[in-house]
Amino acid sequence: MDKDQITCIQNVRIIFKFFQPFPEASKLEDMETVVESLRNLGHLLEQRFSRIASMVEILKSAHNDWKITSKKDRIIMETETFDFNYAVKMLTENGFKDEEYILKVEYERKWGML
Image (tube, rainbow, N blue to C red; front, side, top):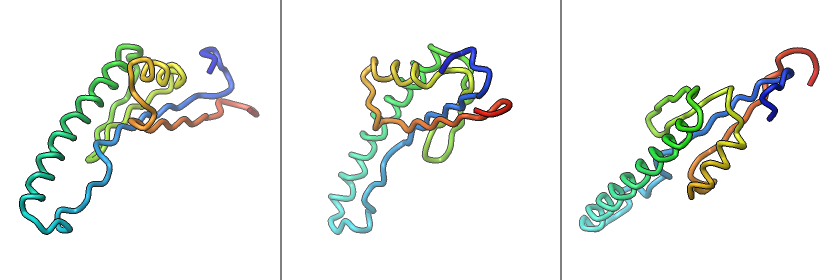
């Protein structure tokens, strides 16, 4: 999007979910399986949080006008002053895949007709 765009505002929201739904422990009958599943989940969460931190760090180094919100199951970064194409390019160049984050872009009209 052109930075001098006078007709609309680009609202960019990048969402980092902590993890995908995990099978319920109650469905596992063997206690050893439950314990091992919990250990595996701990390792997966550690890796996921590390990757999220790296993505946030990359985006913050490129642009300093982010509003960052933490929810119980996700981190949300929002801005109106950074083109989403640059954000996606930076994440891709640093080895992150599209599946690792959710990108939402909304355009808000400033005045008149688009």
